[in-house]
Image (cartoon, rainbow over the protein chains, first blue to last red):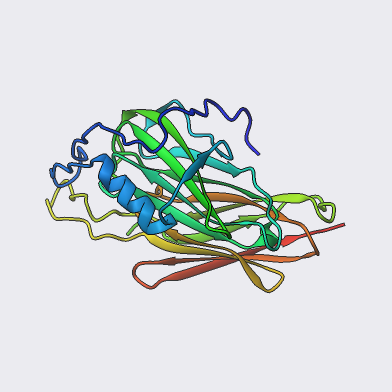
Length: 154
Length: 111
C-alpha cells in the first residue's frame, strides 16, 4: 500500500496526449515525434483494443518528479482477483518517451489483488498511463500527467 | 564495469494471516541502459543492457510474469502484493537482454 493515492485524474483519458516530445538531452540527439498515435498503438499491441473503462485503476504517480530517472509509479486495480474473474494483465505507458511501453505484468488469480510499484524513467513531462485487462477481455485505465524537472534518458 | 546483480527479495518479517495480502519488495543492481545514450568521453553509443523479464513464483506457480523495457529505472525496485496461502518461498527471477539471469528468494510465513 502507499499513502495517499494522490491526484488520480479522470479527464480525457486515452483521447491522445498532444504534446510532441524533444529528444532525450543526453541521448543521440534524435527528435522523436512521439504522438498520441504512438501510445495508442502501444496500448493496442500490449493490452488489446476495445472500450476502456475509467475508475478501477489507481495510478499513484506524483504530480511532479524532480528527477526523470526515477519516478515512482504505484498501481492498484480495484477488481476481483479470483478464478474466473481476474485481472490478467496490466501495462504502464509514458506517452512522451521515445518508446511509450514501459513494462507489462501478467497475473494469476492466485495473486489475490493487483497492486504493485515500479520506478520508471521519463524523458520529459508526459501523461503516464496504466491499462489493465481482465480475463474476459475488458479493459480498464487510468492516466496521470506528471511534470518532470529534469528528464531521464528513457 | 558497473555492479550488476545482488538481487534481493523481502517478505514481511512477521507471519502473515492466511488469506491476507503480503507486500513483497525486490531490488536488483542493473544499469538499465536504453541504448540511446552516448558515452560522454568516447562519444560512442552505450549498448542497450536492461532487464527484460521478471518472474515471481509462489507455491510452485508463476504468479506474476512481467516484460520490462529500458524505461524502467536503473537498479530497479519492484514491489507487489501476494495473497498469503501457505508458508513457503517466494522466488523472483530477473533476466536481461544479454541472457544473464538472477534470482533470489524470501520466505513468506503464513499463520
